[in-house]
Image 1: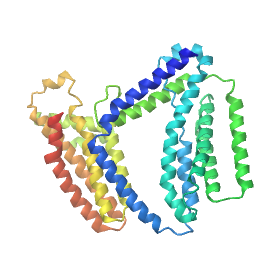
Image 2: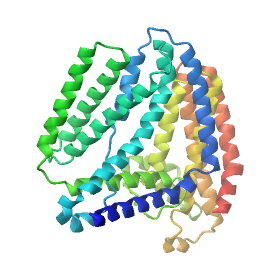
Image 3: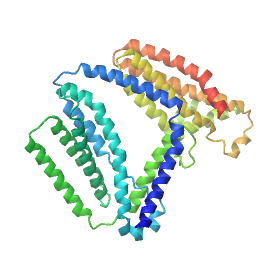
Image 4: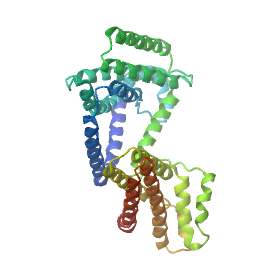
Length: 404
């Protein structure tokens, strides 16, 4: 038992060390500024939106869907490693204290997310229902109980071999969690809430009996843990080099026409290299697509002119800042030194690629802002994005490159 406790403490300490190692790079001055600015703007417009809500607004439905999604997202962080499926499988029966701590650790992390989600929804709840903030702690306790129910169901389902069970499990857990929150917020009759609670208890008992005598699927647990850590490493890699990250390079033949504008010649060698790297490497192309898509969606629903301009500038800045490490992506490859070209072309080629990406992103943002009928917003976003991109390419990015 002491050995199992020591193993958990060792894994937990190693995990916290890894978080601290990269958190100091993630939460730097630039990101904190963007977060404070973004959260401040979101809180301002959210408070204005709440003030204009009518009593017939479906607050219960909104809270049910949002909190249902947060409750259904209940991964169990086991902190297992690849070698564990060789050395720890014979000790599976003695590993129960380890996995109990893993479930408790997972609950502790996700409880904070629930706390912030409920706190964000409370102004809407208080405005529409008129009950004030006095029921906050009661709702929070209810959400904690539902989170424990979700976590334990996920743990039992992980022991089952049917590949379709996890999908249906998520759908059922989301439906039950969202319905329970909806009924409580709506002040539904007690007997109706009791029926749903009984259904959830029966569901829990069914999966408990189904998984009680089954062994753990170590390969699934380890694969999920590795996927979760790779997600964290990909995020941290936006701010610093992460040696543990295994970059995915894919052949995207359908994107080859985009390279047609690059002419053949020595002076275009780095330009072709960076363009290929951008299109084939998921950590840069995928990041660019995600940021552009999220920014365009937010701009489409942003009717306030100042908010639209702020969102466009913030997302352009984030894209530029997180693509800067690409200039050193091939630095450890010795064959790059065989290029018969001057090294100053490397910086110029990277800046050219980055400027194209940011200008294209600016056009997408302007189009998204104009599609909702606000043409002046679209024109202002286009002008502001173009000027801001020029400042980044001429002043900000070259300075950051010199420091790397």
